[in-house]
Every structure is written in structure tokens, then in C-alpha cells.
Image 1 (cartoon, one colour):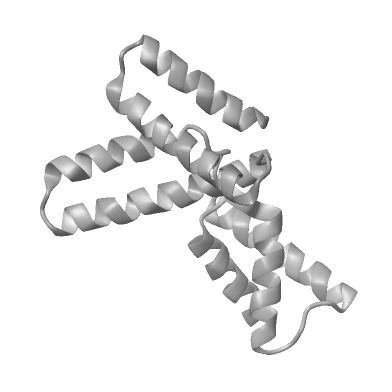
Image 2 (cartoon, rainbow, N blue to C red):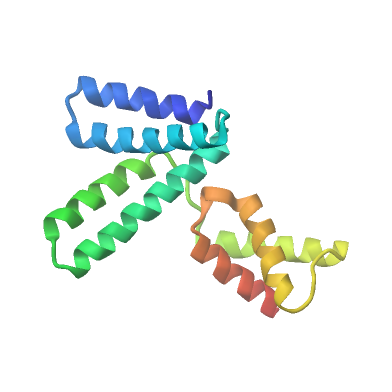
Amino acid sequence: MSTLKEKIQKATTEAMKAREAMRVQTLRTLFNAVRKKEIDERKDLSDTEVEKTLLTVLKQLQESLEQAKGAGRAEMAAEAEAEIKILKEFLPEQMGEADVQKAVAALAEKLRAAGTLPTGNAAMGALMKAAMAEIGSKAEGKIVQAAVRKALEA
């Protein structure tokens, strides 16, 4: 069992003991998403795969938050914000935009030097794939995408 999955289970147990209903509900939702993915793939997930599942749940919550704000439903928006805050506790420390740009630029140079970076539109996909593999859940995809575009312009 992955250590991140164990950490989520332990946090759920602690929240149950402290009678924190919102935290318990949020962590159970996350754990159920992880379990569903394990059942679908018929294997135990690694920490990286659990992080990807966490990011998926987080993205869904952020979309719910935007919809709630757009509809003027302050109570639902506040609930979504609280859930997002709880889930972010389980993500690794996020990289800043400058750090992402440096990492992507270095990766682009490395791929160019090795001759494995295609030209044209294919370069975007190849560099994005390599960057997401290296950076992973340490930065949002939008930030990585912007850094990739900037690196390809240079």
C-alpha cells in the first residue's frame, strides 16, 4: 500500500475521532476515488498514481467552486473551498512559475541536445509529456503548458 494512501486513511481516522464531519466526508470521497481506480486497474496504486487521482478530484472540486460562484451560491462555494483546502494538504509542495519555467527550459535544452525534440507542432506534445513526467503534481498543468510554450518560442 502506498504511503500517501496510508496517510489519507490515518487522517480519516483522526478526523472521525475528532468528529470533523466535513473533513471525514472529503477524505472518504478521496479514498473512494482511489479505491475505485484500484479496482478498475486491478492493482494497488503507487504514490504517483494516488497523486494523479487526488489531482482529478481536486480539479472536479475547483470546477464545482467556479460553478457555485457563477450561480451565486455562496454556501456551496464555501463548502467547495473548504474541501479544496483539505485535499491540498496531501499534495507535494507546489513549484512557483519561475521554477517551472527553469525546469521546462532545461528539459527542452536537454531534449534538443539529444536530438529527441521534434520540430513544429509535435514539439509541444513531446515537451509537454516530458515536462509532466518530470514535474508531475508539483505544478498545475496550465502553468506547465505556459512554460512549454515559452520554452518552444526561444
